[in-house]
Length: 183
Image (cartoon, rainbow, N blue to C red; front, side):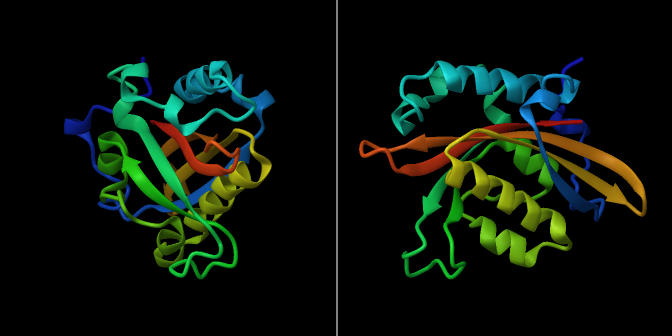
């Protein structure tokens, strides 16, 4: 069974008023967790792209399956020195927030900055996810995370993510991309 969610049967995490806990998952563990199947496949595709860190031009919609695209996202790096960035570190802005992500979260995030989502989040889970995405930027390596969405003490939904850095012509990390597998 695929971990991708059928959108018409979905009640979003916002509609359910779920809280979130985000956790970093080591690659060695990811290989053993079934919900990371699609994120791990995207990671392997990223590894096959040219360059120590692939160039952002290597990410084209035509390179990915139609079932993966709704679960993908692209983040632009907002440098620390950018006047709209008041985080004291890089910020990240959604260039693309796939339709399955939008339906699962219950809101459109294209154009939104992660720092704003973290500041407006109902719990520390969003801020933890932001920190994990920043880790991919700073280390120039793939990071994997799982977000558990819960009500009271029961986990109701889970999303397994991969965050992959992309560079520009000068080798600077200017974008991150990845996908989520929702269960």
